[in-house]
Length: 285
Image 1 (cartoon, helix red, strand yellow):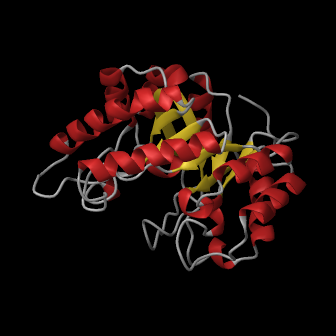
Image 2 (cartoon, helix red, strand yellow):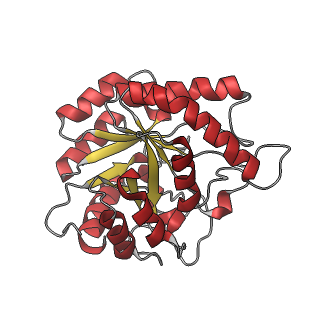
C-alpha cells in the first residue's frame, strides 16, 4: 500500500464534501476559489459536479491544470433508469452524451455513473439493470472517442428503489464483462461497499478496471442515509482494509473524499473541512 503519512498528493476533493452538489447547501465557493484552496493544501486533484461547471468546462479545466490540481473526475452522468431519470430514452442519452462532453472539456479522465433506480412499472432490479447495460454499451464508444473512461458506481442497497438498482461491485463487474469496453470500469466508494463481505474477491476480479476510489465513513448512528456521511475515522468502515484491496488490484490513482453531510461538515468553514481531510487522510486512510 502507498504511504500517505508524509505525502498526500494522492488526495482529491470531491466538491460534494463542501455541499456543492445540492442547491442551498455549503458556503458557495466558486470553482476558482476551490481550486486555489486545494492547491494551497497540496491536494492532487478535484472532482466537480456538473451543476458547478455550466458552460465553463474548458476554462475551469485549464485553470485547475495550471494550478497543479487537475480535474480528475466529474460527477456524474444522469440517472439512466428509474423515477429520477430524464423522461424518455432520447433525453437520457442526450444528457449522457453532454456529460461525456463536459468531462472531456474539463480534461478529466473519468465520468462517474450512478445508474438510477427501478424503472417505473417494473419490480426488482433485473429489468432495470438490463436497460442500464444497453445504455452504457451505447455510450461507451462515444466516450472512448472523447478520451473518457466510464466508472459504474454501485450504491448501498438502501438506494436501490430510486437512485441505484446497481448495488454491488459484483453486478457492476458483470455489466463490465457483458459490454467488454476497455474504457468501462467501476468506482469503489467506501460508503456504498464497506458492508460487503464479498468485496475482496470482487476487487481482485476487477483488477485494472477500478477507475475511482471514494473515501468517507459510515456513521454507526446514521440519521440520514443520503446526507449524513462521516468524515474518515468517524464511523465503522475498515478504511485501510478496503484500500488494501483496491490497491492490491492495481489501483494507484486519486483517493477522492466525498462526504455528504448536511447537518455537520457542510455547515463548517470550507477551510476547516479541507484541513481536516488532509489530517485524516494522512493518519487514518
